[in-house]
Image (cartoon, rainbow, N blue to C red; front, side, top):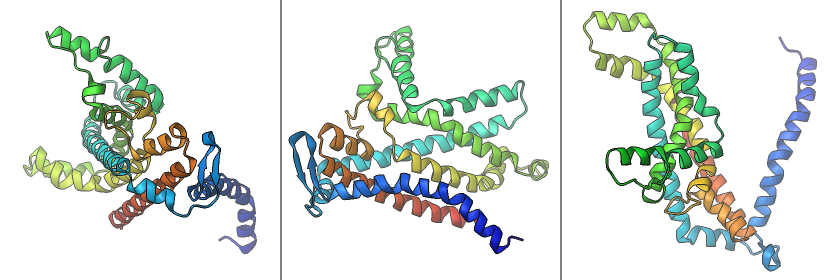
Length: 287
């Protein structure tokens, strides 16, 4: 049992790490909060330390804000649908005995370790390129006109790229949950004549509910900040500008630090609201 002396020693030992973490998090956040109330446009030599909530009003009232918010939600929802559905199917498949099972699992998980920028470049040049992409060669092989995915279906293209990268994560978590399921219960249900679909609906899927909730929580937090895939493929054009990319445009492209900082604070608040809501769901499922 820990004594008061040992607890004090533990606090002293973790204090430097906690201090560095707080400084690393709080200083940028405080600076962003400060600039959000200022009119700071360095390229024009303008700096007014206090303009109240003008930046917030300007950011929230712009048409680009609502469009980017809808795009963000649509993109996150689509990616979650693909990764959860595909993850469940892949987990069930990888749980079956097969030749080279270990190698197959490694290959399935490998895309998760590819950097987002590299992943976007690979998909853009190797698959979606209208002249030399593999999909274009497939269209030409069947005598069809090549389809320009990035200009004619830009949102779908980005969803596919990001879902491809996050599918292994969902598969890994769900595979662990599938392997924890009692095989004797499944065998008993099969012997009682329960069809495969009924076993999946009433036994496997309820068992996976907690794992699915965790996957949704973690992926949502990260997917709300999608940037690299958009920057590399469409540069925010064709209706692919998310809230994160809108903040980037306001800060770096428009050089309006105050307006961009206000957008960043709004994005942080919205992300925390979503995280709190999902955490409540996770808590209920884990009880």
